[in-house]
Length: 310
Ligand SMILES: C[S@@+](CC[C@H](N)C(=O)[O-])C[C@H]1O[C@@H](n2cnc3c(N)ncnc32)[C@H](O)[C@@H]1O
Ligand code: SF4
Ligand code: SF4
Ligand code: SF4
Image 1 (tube, rainbow, N blue to C red):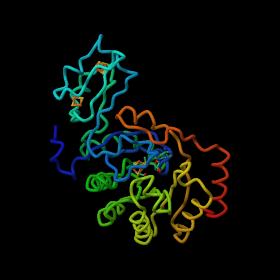
Image 2: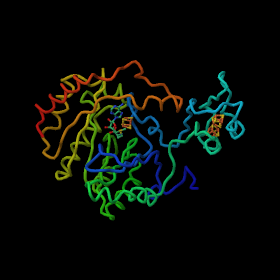
Image 3: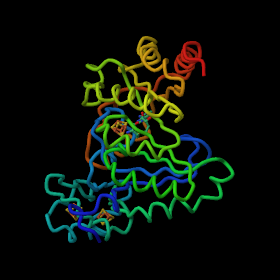
Image 4: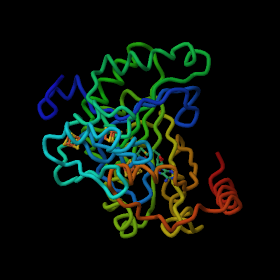
């Protein structure tokens, strides 16, 4: 086991999920490697477990057998972070929890589970290569996602270099908020870039994601200028009350339309990540927000087709 605070960032990285057989995040059939850490805090984020750089304890009360019949986690916790709740199950005191993972090793029902573990570059590539026959036939490969994969730029770069050495197609999903000098080294090894532009309005961007959009928009321009032959898909998750008007979408189209290697698509807001907020002891701030009706998404897609033929 490698010490979590002192490891070679070129050889090891924090990964919280590896998803096989994806067809949404780049060409063909792909394996998505989700890296930990993100500088943004999008209120709608479907991967809240990605945001902290370090591994994080998750607790799903529905899976807990009950303290009466089990209770092993309480005995295993050296910081006394696990307590009884009124329903015969447990609660986790996040102030006391050090995310050491001892309780997860012992939990028989997997009610306790860690999001994120340190993995070596070769371990990741080995997992990805298990599906190489699918990639050959479909033009697929590996997609780095997160979190924000550029947060672990050194690790991302080594994974992508190795993937390219093995002739795998590479893609990355990024929010674009990163140090350009580091990001550019990673982009060199990427065949397809999925770049989120969430809003052109920086004040609103900051209100809903925690950061303004200046760095993102600057990086986008640099990316298009430095890599004119790399296919870039700009994506916007359409979030009610944040960026769901015609003007919001047209402002993004206006910003990206001068770049010939760029495509554009909108993603409908979904709430699939909501339960995970509870598992990690956080509040989901958009709990009262309903998904946008199908017809409205169709209208916005039509608007995109009319104003950004591709
Ligand atoms: C989880 S993010 C990871 C990559 C990067 N951090 C980003 O934001 O682009 C992958 C994609 O999921 C989208 N996404 C995240 N939460 C969403 C939600 N609740 N509904 C729809 N799309 C969402 C993001 O906009 C992004 O296009
Ligand atoms: S992760 Fe470690 S500190 Fe946190 S509750 Fe479990 S055993 Fe206790
Ligand atoms: S070890 Fe797991 S199943 Fe047992 S009491 Fe703790 S959380 Fe519940
Ligand atoms: S940038 Fe991506 S990973 Fe980060 S909080 Fe936003 S949606 Fe989640």
